[in-house]
Every structure is written in C-alpha cells, then in structure tokens.
Image (cartoon, rainbow, N blue to C red):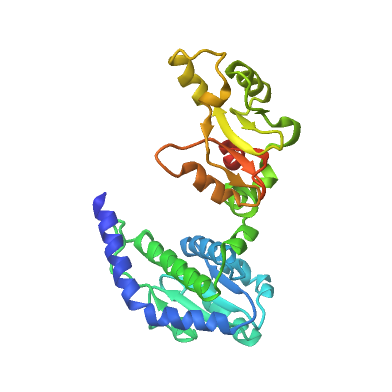
Length: 312
C-alpha cells in the first residue's frame, strides 16, 4: 500500500512543477472576469469537479458545479458571458465536454481545461490548460482513475488557495460562508453569544466557607463557582477539579474559600470570538474547561464552558 502513496506523491510533485505558469494564468483569467466559476466534468472527473466548485465557493470565489451530461439538456443556461468554465477530463476528449464547446463560445464565457492530455482539439480550444497528465494510475491495471483524480483535485485546491490569497480572503469572510457547525460557530460567534449569565451564574463573595461555595457550585451545575466582591469584580475561581483535589487532601469543608480558590485565573473578555476563547482554554500545560467572562471593568459577567464552544 505504501507504493500507492509514493506514486501519488511523486506525480503530485511532477505536476506541481509543470503547471505553475498555467496556474498563474488561470488565476489572472478568473480575476479578470466579473462572473462566477462553473466547474464541469462527468464520471470521476465530475465528482472531483464538484469538490473543486465547493472549495472555490467556500473560500471567496463564487462557483457552481455543472454536470456535463445535464449541461447538454438545458443546464448550460447557468453559464453567462462573464463566467469562467473549468473543464475536468483525463482524456481531454470527453464527448460531453466537446459538445458543450460551441455553446460556451457563443455565450462568451472563458474556458480553462484541467486535462490529462494537451494535444487534443478540446484542449487547444481552451484559453488556459493545466496539464495534469500522469504516466500511470495507482490502480495495478492502470485503468481506474486514482492518481489522475488526485492530481486534478490538488490542482483545483491550488487554484482555490491562490485565488483566496489574491482576494485577501479573511477569517471573518470564511465564518460568513460557514455559519453552521463548529467551525463557523467558533469564527462567527462571540463569547457573549453563548456564555452563561444572569441567574445561572455561580458566584459567592469572599469570606464564605468551602462548603457554601460547593453548594453554590452544585446549584448552578456549570463545573465551577467564581468568587467576586460586592461590585462583581472577579477575585478567583473554584472548579470541580479543585474540589476533588481538596477532598483527596482531606481539606476541612469549613475553610474559607479565599484560602483554596485559584487566584488570578484565566479569564476571557465577552467580546472575544469563540475560537480565541478555545485557544485560551487550551494554552499552557493544563487545559481549563471553564472560563470566567469579564467586561472592560473586570466585572464578572458570565461563565464560558468548553462544551458551549464545541457543542452544536
């Protein structure tokens, strides 16, 4: 099985060195147009084309996938004169793609080929061709599209990333296009959006006993209790982990919480993004799973749990 990896890595290196110039031309062509990128193919190439279109769309380049078979029966209507059509084919001679060519030229769209051959009539009709040809497939019969599919997909990734860099695509924009799931949640939401607040907050004043602090911790069931003064300025925190360690050590429950709480705990501002808050939780030798949330006056206004960040 290592042979499959070795062969594909070698082919990727060869193709990467070969297509740099044409890749630059493809980037410039796409940036020169005001429309979208239409990525098309059929069979395995169509599957790769679908993935490339999705990557482009999610990284700042408007793109759609066009099934080459359906294109010949009306779906070419999604192509406009300001668009760039990207065709994928190992043979550069796929009948469905060749039959699309007259319509694409009449519409006025530009054409980029990601092909495993460059001397065909279809390849010579393109404005730019990325030569992703490979000598052999990883398939022992050298028939099933394996290495050829890999290099085509990586070429598409390279195109998307180059466009992303040229467009100066930001994390904020990435979050805008990924509002669902953990990734978008961490980039798009701020601590204030998911933190526990108000009556939910576990809090005690200095001078209470460890037993009283544990009672308040149990009431809130958030894994910690914060110690704050009368103006809600944060003084320390006591977590469930602290309580377990104190119990093992035989600590008297009547001891003042001031003596056993963690002073100057990690904190997070309510205006920080969730991704940054997660970085704070994971920094250092020991992770923390709850963070006191403070405002600009260092007042305790919320509690953030790791579960609030990674949960959907």
